[in-house]
Amino acid sequence: MDQQALLKAIIDNAIDGIITIDTEGKVESMNPSACALFGYETCQVIGQNISMLMPEPYHSQHDGYLKRYQETNEAHIIGVGREVSGLRKDRSSFPFRLAVSRVQYEGRVVFTGFIHDLSREKNAEEQLIKYTARLELLVEERTETLQSLIAQLQKAKAEVSLSLVKEKELNQLKSRFVSMASHEFRTPLSSIQLSASLIEKYAQEYQNPNVSKHVGKIKLGVSNLTNILNDFLSLERLEAGKIESLEQAFDLVTLAEEITEEMQLFAKQNQNIIYQHTGKTSTIILDSNLLKNCIINLISNAIKYSGENTFIEFNTEINQSQCLITITDNGIGIPIDDQKHLFEPFFRANNTGSIPGTGLGLNIVNRYINLMNGEIEFESSQNKGTKFTLIFTLV
Image (cartoon, rainbow, N blue to C red; front, side):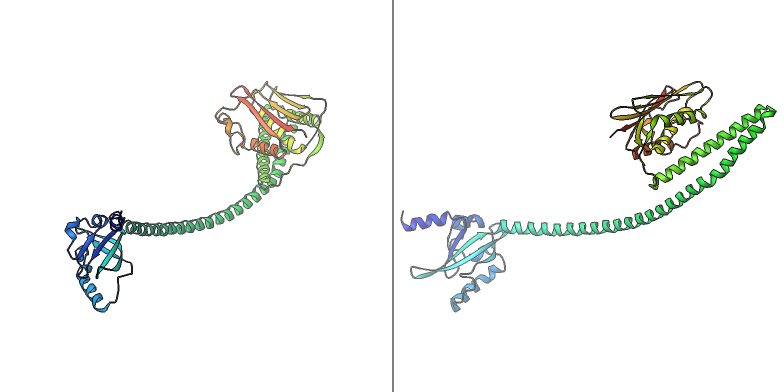
């Protein structure tokens, strides 16, 4: 292949457009890529002024540029690449990078223009500008939203801090009130209890059943009110963190027998508390005062929610790994729907009716057991009784 054929093959297959013009600006050649860019056939451009491929203002100014170069020989475009716009046959314009070179060929001057289409790059730039503007707008919106959220959080924080201060003050006031009420009420309640006992004693010689009946009501009312005050005082001390588990060794059987004897005095007519211990040993290391309160509370509930002429089973067991304490009654039981709320404060099952109570007892028992690192479990069926089991793991 000779040099001329090789050169023509290279030009015809070049990706970029290549156009040559004479010194008067007339097109002498145009490769296929240039034809495709401008939308013309070669025959439609050859011999025409190159300005036909230029939009305004380049169309009107081009001949002046070329004439000035010929007169002054000062190059403003030749040898320097720059971005310009081209005019297609369909009158649409497109951006491209133009590089112009001056070539002397067979005793005359020819100008060659190399055209690299920038449409894709410009579209990408425009999209990037749009995306950048959109991103800046989103950032601005998000910043405003974030600033608004921060302001709301700061406001909420201030409100919460104020609420916490008020709640702390209210809790302190509540604690002082509960403590004062519990102590201040104890003295008159003790006096009422003592007076009722004396009235009952002095009225025995009159053998009036109505006196005994009403004295019994007074004693029961005083006992109920005392229990309520004790529950509120215990809850207040638990909330304040004033109660700790003080472990020491003691005889569980001795404690259980004392509790059984004490609670039998509060039992209903023909209600009997049956105590039994299982195990070769009876010594255990726990907080005897907390444990006693738990057992008394559970036996009190068994008495309260069971009828006359019933048995309450009170069992203790110490084996190699655990200490188990169970209190079982045949009372009204706990409805299945209420069992999940049983240890919540102030909760009472819907079948308790007019039976007095604060709904705090089992919550306090559960918290005492947790302080001693124990567990409490129960089984209950409505109208078939309830069984509570206290479980302590032996170290």
